[in-house]
Length: 191
Image (cartoon, rainbow, N blue to C red; front, top):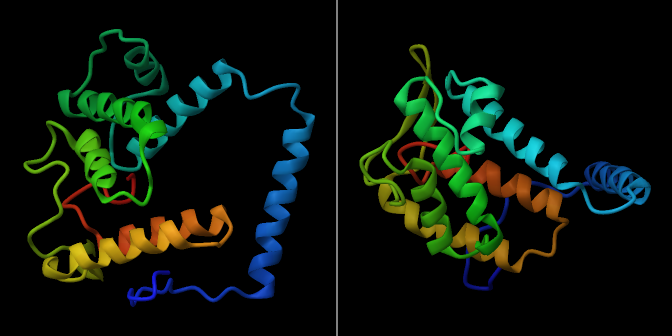
């Protein structure tokens, strides 16, 4: 964390937590050692297709694995226009990932712009109003006021750039904080 940043992740690194991270890393190491080479292009492709379909299904996207696969292959599919656009946008965002720096605020905005192009009024822009998450009539989460969002995002990204934590913990904290801050009108969790 930069010395002038007030941000500190809301997580205490306990021995139990670090042991779990070590166990996950060890399991990944064993799996990796058994692989003859890097994951095959076919495996990466299938993983991307399944990830896109599953993350969009959570958001009520109706397209099947077969339809997402067809879109991934550049084919036309029948389905709701919004659902098709969401899949195309997710494919574009995944394609752009290798050039993104996770601590660069412009890349965060660009990633959101890719995910939400043609779907919301201001893709790739931080929200300008209040946001609350409800489950039925019950308030589940009241996001910080919009005026605080730029500073909170800057603090989070600065922490990401300077963190010496294990990448698994950093990615979990980044996801948690993005959902908590809710910097965009939509698609914060998928981002």
